[in-house]
Length: 481
Image (cartoon, rainbow, N blue to C red; front, side, top):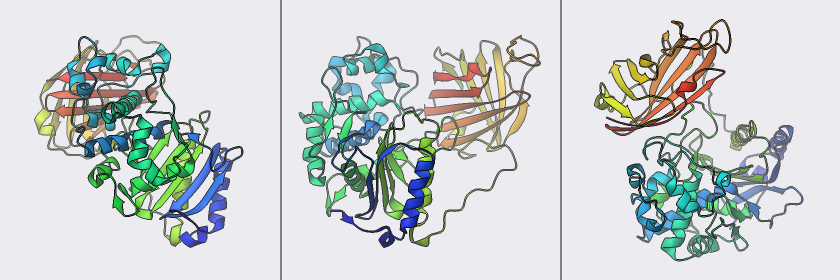
């Protein structure tokens, strides 16, 4: 299906490609393959010895995107609904007492990494039955409230595919799709200890096979003129279903999440796998970039640098000018999102009681007044008030006592409090994010994300970035009015 052409045929020069590859080399990004496709034309394909075109490669979490497509096929067959509770399909794996928060978790929540769990590291516990272990975890937020990368949830969905299809996971996908695409003849998937498919991390296939899968997804489920899966499902899968920037940082992976697929800037999306496995899809430019590698020892800079280099290359197509960038700020940044949401009226003045949590917060209440608001809450020190601006900073004293002043690491309870700048924004209609910036002799940031499932139920995630304070503002909460 794919043709081989020169870079010049897609509006680039070989010098553009050479410069791109030298940029990757300058950053010492340890890649094993690089493939580039525009339309159905491959204009660059390169492998690093000992890897070859026919070498199957571990794709790590790219596997999750294959799981999502398998779920889409099952939905087309009427074997499940995305809004089915997941526990419906695993009665034999549930604990004696099932949390009401787990009872409400749906397949859609799992596709969007919007579950009631904050993830879990199954390697740490010598887990044999990973499905049973997953359902035994303690919920720490309501499903549908706040994004968190729940890898084991993806694994459970691959087990669900086997239960409902009556076939091995990869065999089912081959019959439904991969045999049609080609280049998946030697594809494999590793297993967990009980023999179930390691569906969140262990697909092995060639980079060319991954390129074909990415083309199928960017065709929204069409291949050689035939619609093989619901176009609506594929468009939902490749569009933002949930925001995912709880740390408030603009990064390559903070543009939202679809169905086991990451949203990117420039209206794009991508599949991510640990260690440098990527399929970056840019529909507006009809461009797909695929790479494999092992960058696990280069965690801090590789992914942003790689994405930036890919975008810079794509900006050179056909002499198109690069998109305009924002001006350098002249004031402190503010929270992401919008200043207004109709949902604010539904929760303003309402008290939410919190289940026990590591922050020690027992209740909170929001009050909105025009372009400002107040978060009132109760923690171990008592009643607190934190004023904030909607898409603007309000300057005040941060309400927590006991942080160091003249002497570092001296935590005495006095009247001393840090100066702070606090802003808020609605990153979704029912998700408010507060950004606290400490602007004193000590610097730090607290990001507080309040995701409301409805006007009476909320999940909260707090993340702190500070030297020796704000520790009371890191963790998860479940709250109800």
